[in-house]
Length: 197
Image (cartoon, rainbow, N blue to C red; front, side, top):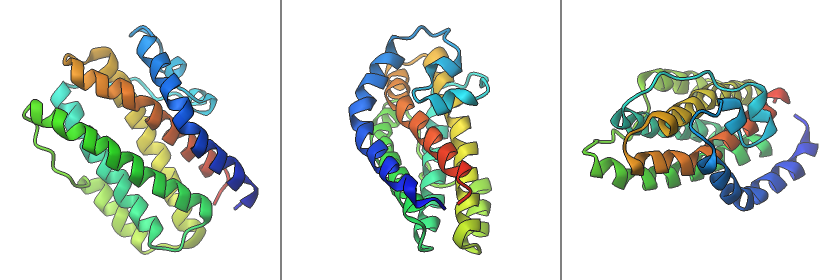
């Protein structure tokens, strides 16, 4: 793995909080008909825009976001148990921190809409987790980053669908506020995956 990327990754992580508020404003002000590729905050995300997703209800969105956050945190915890490279460790730590924060913001919205959050990984990701537990080194990190790319592409499409089609203002507001972070996760995963850890 190319260690020269570490300073750039650290700078990107530090710059995120400053950029995030601008991304929120840009995302919130765009019309609902903007194609997904134009909504992508970093240039990397726009090169392979997420495929459009069929609309889901606000309740289904809440459930999928909760499940997706636990999927990503669960796989990130496996990586952290395996003495990862600094880049993989930084990414996994960020996934856990950001999804913990998003989960805390989602919980009262779910309660207000009578949605019970399961707080666990789905069956597919539990199987992936079990496979990852048997892996180590570059193979584990490559599997992890490939999965993060696949998951975040789907999550970006889910959030964009909610912003366009959602009915409840607080749920749409959560999606609008959180989308730039998800797009950043997606771009970071794609950049790290290309390095062939």
